[in-house]
Length: 497
Image 1 (cartoon, rainbow, N blue to C red):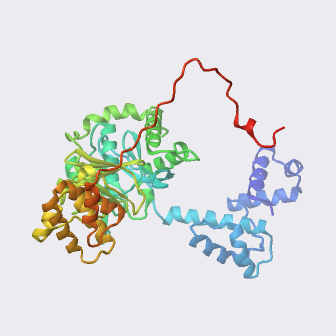
Image 2: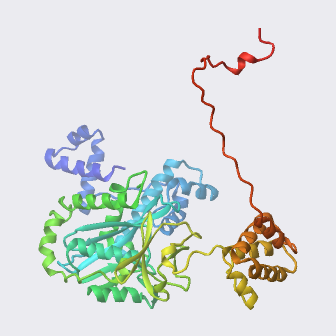
């Protein structure tokens, strides 16, 4: 049985030559075969049907088709070989690969006819901004490696692209990324298309996305309409998905970035480069199309909203805020107030009403950074302040720091009847003066003398004149003496020859 292509050649050559034998000689077949195909084509008006030969994979065609459909044509013949082997397949892997390839082609044709229908999405100027997050590995920080993400956005009409990196994907980072995109293009489009993270859609009811209230307030500030894509459907925002792939393949190096600042500098240079190149779809430079699109944007507000300056936190009664499971101090006057916390890969800045009020080095989770200038009182030392209750206690502590040191040292030594020592010191002060008592208290604290009568004994010793320390005598200076050489002590060693 000749193939369809050979049958077409037979008929075409016969129309030119008009001889069965001549056609058979050119094609290497019998003239009677040529006659049969020519007559069949003349009578039926079509080529002879090709005969289907049985294959070793025919008995497993249904199993192959089921697995191809279940995996959306992603399964490979090597993976499928184990399954068909268990079902009794005894053919070669080559035959199975051919059968799997044909099953995938059939599945794709079926999807083209019965599956999802795609059509180009053409957006007008000034209408759409599409944005999404992408992962960029990690970046080293003083608190250890942190995940690095990038916020990518592309204008639907001009295809102008913006990319900014962040160590977070929380709503504060989303607001900062949006503000950066709006400021880069010089205005605000009418609508912004998002994916469905919790920072955008808090939940879904009957397919409708319930927007995050913070996003609604941000949209009202910038005057754009937020829109969300279908859930788990990246194809509905293919323009920005392509930008994410493009960023990962062309911008992010294999070894990653060494700092957040380096990543953002590289992103700015890369965006300037790609926006100046001719886009493969529009055949125009995005920067040039942006110039014609910019007049249709809404104007930027006078200043960024507070949420775009960082993540909001409430100052607790300890005059601290918690960020990434670490604690940072702020001025005590802000207790109970809402502040914005903005973090990089090196430090954390706390902002209140647009003004930075505190800055700390980035800490690991569980650590604490406290600045003394944020509190009206000095840092606690673990030593409790003395609180005299009786007149005797107040009079004793009025003697000065020596009295406080004596009391603390004697209490730490477990001195019994310590109140009697206080009365003894007060009586001694009335008879001999406070200066002498202070000196006695200081020596008693230094040498641990807390027994009855020790203060009087020390005071009596202080009354005696202290010994005078004789200063070193001046060397004897005589003139006219002979000078001799200075010899080493080794010269006087015993046993020296």
